[in-house]
Amino acid sequence: MEKAKTHIATIAISMITYQLGYGQKVVAKEQPAYTIENCVNEFDINKAKETKSGYQYWFADKNFTQENTLKMSIVAPVKSTHAPHRHPEEEFFYILEGKAAFYLDGKTVEVGPNTSLYCPPNAEHGISNSGLTDLKYLVIKKDLR
Image (spheres, rainbow, N blue to C red):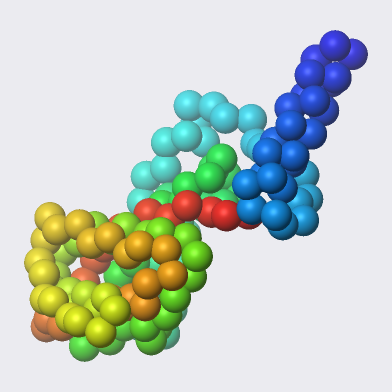
């Protein structure tokens, strides 16, 4: 019983903190029980989701994490996952393989592997494959639930 009261209090405090910080309506969501088995996620092509430009694989989505997400995108040559866009969350890209054209607020730069790209909140940004082989990159983003 004491454990249940502590859990309810934690949820209530989290909801109040979130409402004060963002002024949005919050629906309490119970987090999964974290174990060594579900905290290790090895890439499995059979669990990847096909997209119009290639596929994506969620290593950690908003249903699993406390606040950050991690996804790998694979984009076919001369394609992009979507047009340049904006959102309130900051976002990081990390190029694993291939050549990327990174667009940020009206300017574009071409980069290769082992390069990180940062998108500030509300900045117009986009990434596309500017090479002749698949572009593989990680996307790290905070979930503003």
